[in-house]
Image 1: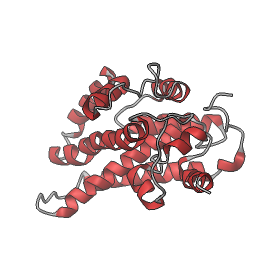
Image 2: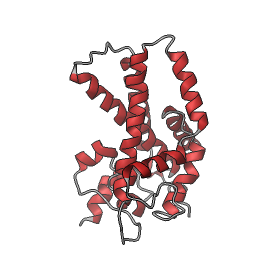
Image 3: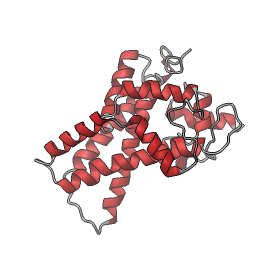
Image 4: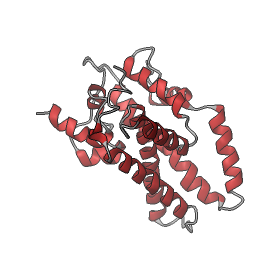
Length: 237
């Protein structure tokens, strides 16, 4: 059974999956609206903390879209996919139906030449650009440019760059480092060819919504991000 369909129809994710997805999307939206009007003080450390918070919320958008690809937002397929499409679009116009097959190729062919997320080199920079090239499209760049040029007519350019564009870029590094590079670099002789973070649930959430528990995710792709800490607990007993 396809990993993306294995959970559909199983009510154990309802309604928490949808509520958490709404919370992440609403938090990202409210934060962005507030920050686009924030009076930037370049000497105030809070400014940079807010950038990191917005980065983390961007990562939450992608994690929400990711869980939707596994059918883990809602057992209602239409609701699940609509939320996945919306969350992906908010993350710099990512296209859900482009992400979907590539992500399942990653699960099917993990750490092989057929894995779109994998790079034979452990070089961070080479791997990152190979990773981004798989998912970045001309349409995304064009839509971001159009949106930026419209928004700058009404909002400060510095705010747009600092709180809308920069956190999105930083989030790609967060997702890549904790969700791809660390889990799949080097040789892993286990059945999922995946490494995993040591147990520390607070750090696992802050770093990447528990996706540092990556072996656990590959071992149980039907476990939503918000329950991966439980899977970690089960596997270390």
